[in-house]
Image (tube, rainbow, N blue to C red; front, side, top):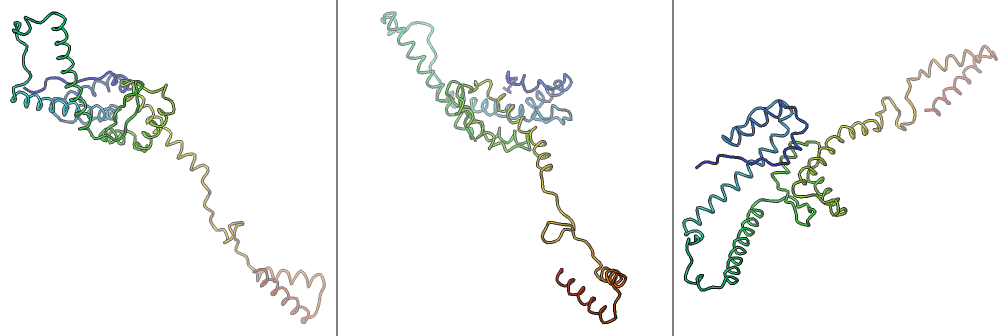
Length: 266
């Protein structure tokens, strides 16, 4: 029989809080349709940023459900767990009440241990990227699939580096470690703040970037100018002739001195 339900988590309340009622309606419709048929709706509003995260969780839940169904089918072929008899067995009839209670407790503990082993197997079947410590000293496993989803939601953020930063912050502040229910809200809030920082960082880098100088000389310390030295020489000669007068020979000497000084300046 096909699966007739999907799981909704309390953490979704935090995720959809910024959305309008119309966007939430479109998101819920898209989520239910994907969970039932596997088809992806084309979304255009803000709900399109939230849908990939919920879609990934649906995929993980479906894989866990299918794995559980396969395990149950395998156990069924092997005979499954023995069913409890409606009446008392011969052994139970002769056991005192206290001893019967002990036997029942042992059986419950046995089933609990089996359930724990199944949970461990499910954890190790999921490839992990990093583990974040929780307030009860257990660890939350961040999967590579979650990292991929966050990379789509926060393209300007180095997700793995920020996850390492979170792990370091939690280890340095163990009293502020999050619960299992609150860890995803903590991660998304951290990544959202880093995403919002990126435009500001770009603006700061642009503000303090060294301006590209155009038309400067090779020493980068003053603007280069086009200088007409011949015109300067002519004006200088005219000024000196007006002031001192002089012969052609003296004028030639003066011209040569000016040319020599030009060579030196170059």
